Length: 335
Image (cartoon, rainbow, N blue to C red; front, side, top):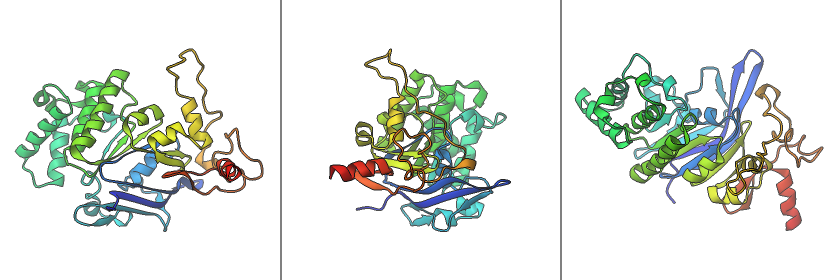
């Protein structure tokens, strides 16, 4: 079996604050194969973006990684220990080189006084030995390939002159132009209307087929993940509570939180049915619950156990893992 493209082991990340150390990611492990799309799902505040930014060491200077945390990126040349990289020169390998990231709001990522073309050519010249003319030619080609009409004209325009869908496509074109091994897409369709959203999702699928890169797709929408991902990891308050093949997890969701996210989706067969949100709110990291982090909102929580002990991860089916005492006890009863 070939090595995974990226392997995350026991990732724990805390932030130094005036209130002390705040845990944002807690003992997270997963791996991604070349050409695989993994969906990272959870509510806002679950730690999805912080986890993804760790793969490029993009988190702020007050970040503290636990000693046992390890992130290994396997490239054609060698294996890279991402968390050991420190200087700007070293980090250039993962920041825009082997890894590219599409951010949720491209308007905040493009400098308003710099044209789309200058953004693209600058990063290409930084990560390769291209001349400015070669970088411009490739940039226009990539803008055209992601479906932007009149790419040569758009190359000279500024972000505020483009529609939301066009800005998102320009961000995708810029991310792809360096031919990364891994693409991180952080809620790339959230601010788009449903028609443009469908086009962007189709484009993402085409990207995987054409470039063979791995993609980590971050979203709170399991419906989007069902259309794009091979595997899904469900995150809650910095913990991965369920992982597995996307069809398996959606059809046989085991963790109460995953089932809650699925129940919150509109039902096409009954459009009049009321939406059923997950009860309560996600706690602040400053008030992290003891035991299972979901027990404060879980309708099936076992008093004296879920609020006291941390559940381990176990297999419910092949490649389908879950961290939940309720599911573990049900499995024991069925056995």
